[in-house]
Length: 386
Image 1 (cartoon, rainbow, N blue to C red):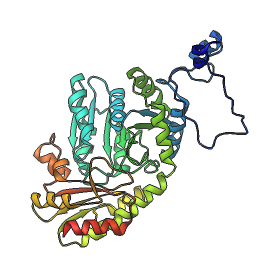
Image 2 (cartoon, one colour):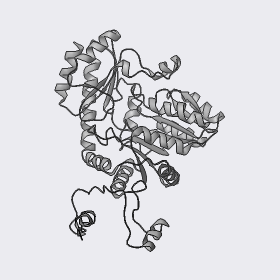
Image 3 (cartoon, one colour):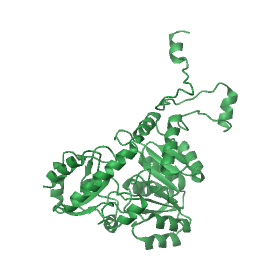
Image 4 (tube, helix red, strand yellow):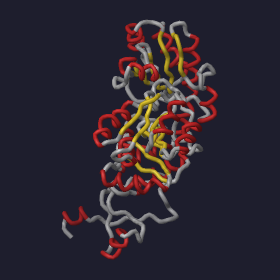
């Protein structure tokens, strides 16, 4: 063979079954080959295991899918290029023209935008309520045939805790699917509730290092086949290298999440005592109206703290600008601590009444707490608030 043939047909390297690599390899290949037409046809017919094209399935992605499904207490998982893509593809797959969808003012802004801007163009109707308004939730479900209810808990950024037992019960009673954006609570939380579909932004706690965009949809077999077929048709698959980085990040997921929760509780306690702070919203505090519910459902208060500044909006901006360790940036769940001021939190698509439900004001500040030394984080907040 000559040079151009040799470099494109390298010799195969086989790893013995009793000599596996400690870290799973990256299968950075779009295509997988078969030794014969017969075997390729058997694979296409579903008569043998294997891989053909990474937009459909890839070993690196399959490893991550199995890990995530196990963490969430389910059997099946699909991966997407971002958390928003995971939500959008799920809603597009599960809804059709004429369906009705229930969502909440306290929910994730891009999810509402997906429903209002895209699904509405294809004849999907929706209702927006408050996650606290149990009477209205049951009234809507009992009078309007509803395909699915999409929500999150804790809500971002005000950290309301959804009553999952109630939502699952009324949804099942009226034949409504439940889609829970479980990003804030984490992959290990809420699996013991009969949620139909979990969606996650893996960009956050799963990856944990702020350098990969990815999303996951986790469910059981009954919905998986429909979702998978639509995901493949829409061409939204994660890159193998991104999947490898997330799998690597998961090695420290439990440690990072535990440390972030510990730091968040300490910061919330510090803020609750500070004279410049009017109110702290953190489910791990006894003062949170749903403190017991949060402990019952997820066992911790999470890694995000939201507080209300006593001063003016201008004073809040000055305070945020003085922070040194809390970096001014979007997202959450990274190893470093982040801050978002009111101007970057306001939901512009909500009505004035819905904004009251959402609970954000001109002095709302959200802290996404990282794994730094807690004394340093408190000192940074103290100098900025001072």
